[in-house]
Image (cartoon, rainbow, N blue to C red; front, side):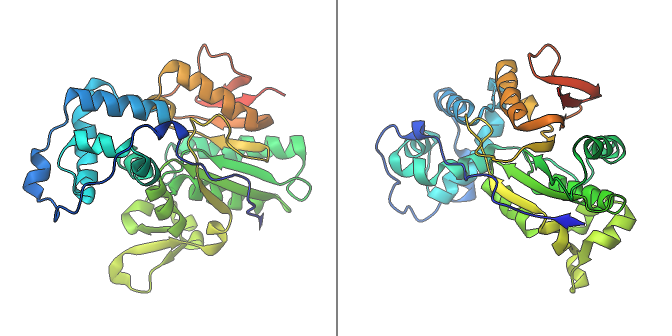
Length: 316
């Protein structure tokens, strides 16, 4: 197996449009009790203001039915900042100080990070049995051409590490096969978790036992119930923060395999199509795009052809 990690993307930054009005954090208010936090309510005005900003900055749509969810997730930010109202929180978020320091924390709080090892396993079967052999036949093995794989919403790392296992297994039947995995997410909190490669035992149950033995390391302190991804897999994955709403991704290599699963469901149809057009630009001809099982590209004007359920290939 030959794996490489290279600097193939630039860091994403908070959008400049956040710089609106001047404000600053309140002075230290000696913390806020649980009772005070749970009594704080978000007004309709504050919800509209926040939801419109979230949609414009990262594309996530939050209909009125999501108000309670947003209120609950942002309460911990109010407590961390010793702010006693969502109105005051908005003032801080949209201030020069807040635009620098709070934007990433807010995104971490509101983004959904549901993921598992070998989630939607038929995708990985297709990858191993069909996509990889066809790409090797089309472009030659990794000794002549390294294959770049992108997990575009990697969350806490289960997806890119699953990809690393599958690609490593494939390399054993394809001498000289080389690959590199780029894993991106908008949330810095989940990226920190992903980089560590440490998971509770219950999280790795979906991993087949033979792969657990090869690619997972048990903690020396058995009572912790923790496992860690083996170094050779961790070294094959480059993690980076990226907002898919940005016009330019800064990715400077062609992508052979692109996983963008269970992301489109958070965007409206026009945003989905715009996003997919940008993603398609990074796919090499003949490269594969995998989306979630509840997502569809039907009716979109894209340079992609469906080859299986929720699996698409860029036209050659």
